[in-house]
Length: 263
Image (tube, rainbow, N blue to C red; front, side, top):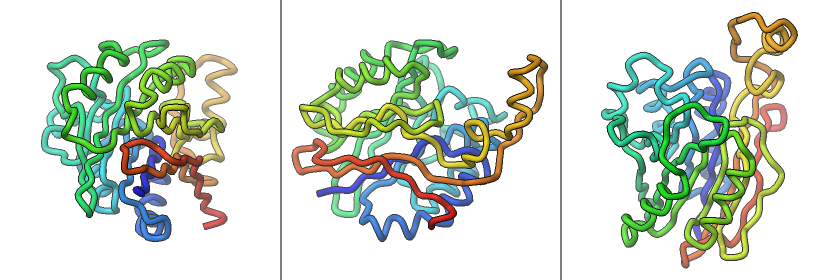
């Protein structure tokens, strides 16, 4: 049996620092074969840099995924091709730089395919169909992987749930990201695909989806533009922990949460 930990969006320095400090102990205590994290908000709450991605992989992350903030940091469109163990959303236009998927090999030789698709409901980036993109990658890479993790970075809950059912029996895990709020529907679908609508976030929960409370409230109250600094209090790691069988499917799944106060 293999153990896979997927962690939701890393938000700023608080999320990065806790992950880098605690991941080694978590890998050992949980017997993890793979750790996959979404890093699209790891640089000041918006985007990622090459150096941050390198720090995450040095800390023990096997694959870093991204989302709609992939290009927020200046120059990352040039750096992404030289950033290992990282993949940008697979359904962005083909001319976009970066790898659309990544295969990570565990210590004993098992191969995990990882890719992200962006949702198209209430999202701004131009993308191909996430369902057709998932079909194509799973089909084209058949025989090159033993397990498949499909992340859907999307706003609409219904779109995430739909992809879970669509890929049931074909992916090991379908997990949602983007909203930064962990959902309580972690389960294994009837044909063996682990599913969670949103993994939540790795970052400060004493805030509004990772940002300081006062400026976000101000925007809602008067609509005026404001800087939205990353919050600092109550840092947690959110995600899902999945047990994988030799058949390439899930035999167990649980919501994962680590709280800084509890350790």
